Image 1: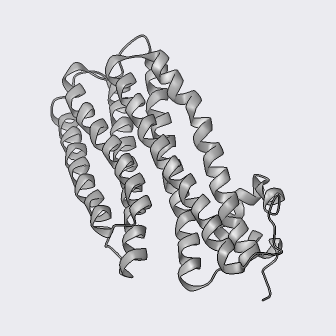
Image 2 (image 1 turned 90 degrees about the vertical axis):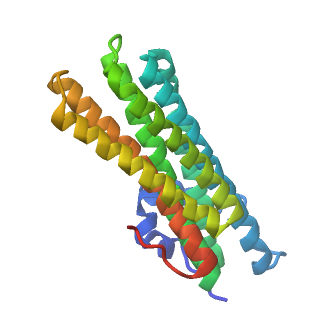
Image 3 (image 1 turned 90 degrees about the horizontal axis):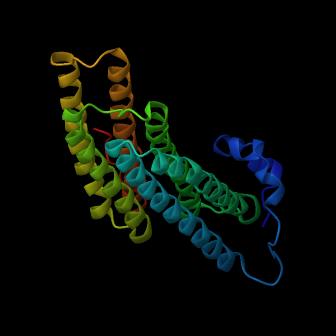
Length: 252
């Protein structure tokens, strides 16, 4: 079999960010391409990629949980902890991309195996975005400290949005592990609840706001961060559904 070269992998559109980051130099390190079968190597590397992806979802869930608590209580120490922990998400994403690109570069997966690897790369991107959105929440907390970023009457909304986001992060991890399309479909239901809260938040901003422009900007950004966190979790669920059933779940 003629395997693609590392240059071939570098030309794939969804790998360019990883290649630019210098990951391409590590693709062949520690990989034994002699003495074991092509079929045996693919499940092993794919399993490592799935492990990294589950770890990313777990990191994102913990990050948004810490960020929400920091937001509700103006806890700058907790916000700083979430910000510093983001490096772990970046490192885990780099490992996941490296393992996925080893598969593409060295084993030439086709059909179902290829779809799994490509979906995994996209899922890594979504999970990484989830972690970055939690980071942005914490940055607002740090910027407004020692003041609270939220007016008292909005804390209930964000407590519920935070709860849903944490739940979505945990469920995304579970559906990646199980591949269960029914569990994956549940992510859409939770996302719809998040969307309703987001819309209610904007209704308050339009009708009853008396806390100034800076606070309005913060609340608008915060609401968007939680809403986008949910959207990325739903995208992960959509790919799990497609891999399991061969059908696409509509975005709306």
